[in-house]
Length: 181
Image (tube, rainbow, N blue to C red; front, side, top):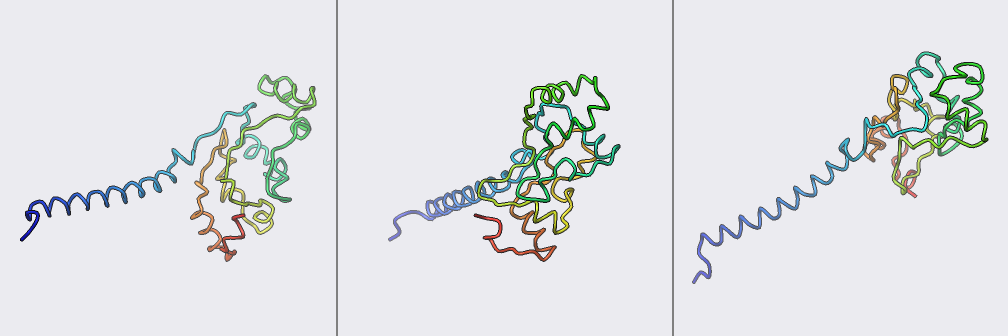
């Protein structure tokens, strides 16, 4: 003797299938969303305290990345130039530009300019710029063509897949402990 009709069994099976597919689809949407430009903020430039046009400094003046971001050869952070580095040129050129008023004020007050980070990695990821720069990874590989940007913005999602693919292409280690602490 059958407890439920064939129609009820079909309804139950259909309901279970919908729940399983819904949960699976929800997880898939979360993983896809995590890598979306909306979450990674790719192509979104944070507001900076000074209007700094990399197109001019990198493109027109051919200032290399490492001149301003000299920490990139030494350690974990590329860093931003101190006010003295900026004023090394701007004591002589664009001395009265209103756009440089915050730089001149910071120099006069002997205080740093507080720039907003453009690229952020999760806290559990250990990344060392020095290792990558000394092994020939170009800044543009991760940061895009900064010399073509008016305002710098993330161009790559910098997901684990992005990093692992790069390591595989270059024959670098893919041992988890090399990047995760």
